Image 1 (tube, one colour):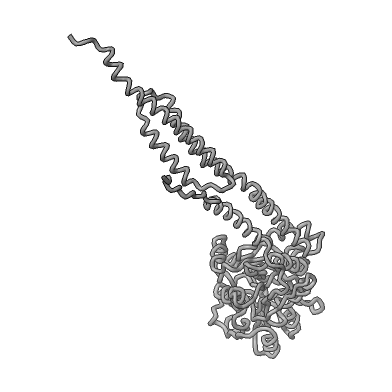
Image 2 (tube, rainbow, N blue to C red):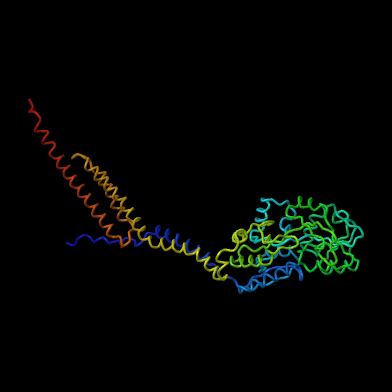
Length: 470
């Protein structure tokens, strides 16, 4: 007669999803770190927004372009009306602009500068970072007035050029003129600047020309060449820098504009904003270092207002500074950048970060099998704990002890072992566990047989010892 149908064998699963997922997650995280470090190669073209033709921004940008060309990078220059337009282009990811010059005061809108304000500006422009402050941009007030005004309120009623619309000059003047006692309606404001304003001043159509620009701007030499022109010295310069801490007080020495003509004929006190090199946050780190190298070559020399190596600087910045840029300015170029070609130094720098991560990933992959084996053994040893409990109870139990609860516990252990997912490579551990479970089962069976035999002989022994009835 055929026996009962054989139960279909069920192979244990070949892997544990939880452990595999954990190892995979760690590996993916490390791979992501490596991918971030191995960013795409250094871009061959960078777009920089500058200023109007002939401005200091454009002149400096031309120097930057020549320096980046040495590293095989093309710096494309885009003209603008000034710092406010540069800010709009930098804020717009669709503009394609990567970097540009910004005048201090354009970002803070005349608010009192504090550490909290810097954080606020960073939140308002989350995609922008500062690379360095680069040079002073004084406010120059040229006039052809018979007297020598020293406070802004003395310019009331005059015809004054305040720069073209949407320029850094207008941004600054709208902040400081009302504070200095010269409301915008108290004079004849003309929205002209550059060569147009110079021509109007020479023709007698203007009384005053105000402009914000660096000391190397060609416009200054043109203004100084206008017959009868004078440069206004601000008596309230210190008061203005207290009111607007992002402004600096500067002194133009006698003859600083034109030694031959002795212009100015005496020292002149000015207030000055500072130009910052600002970039989009996602600009490649190698390009950041190239731009800082260009800034160092272009702005580190001493000038009329600045000391040797005063710029580039981490001071006077309204945006959070980029980490690599701050390290470059504070600590100077690294050993690699000083002694190796730029491309090689950048590659070594990236590899110095990647290799430890790669070594960590290799170690994880190397020791993962051992960790997996430990994890499997740990699950099996938990079952051994249940078997050990049953054996300990058996050793302490008497012959008449009820072992039904232990048999039920062993049945649950068998059910758990049957569901235990174990890879084929660890089947020997599973079969050894089943053998030990069978051994405990045999002990339970022998104990149950002895208990039944004891219960069967117990009535006969009791009747044999009882006295006969009287």
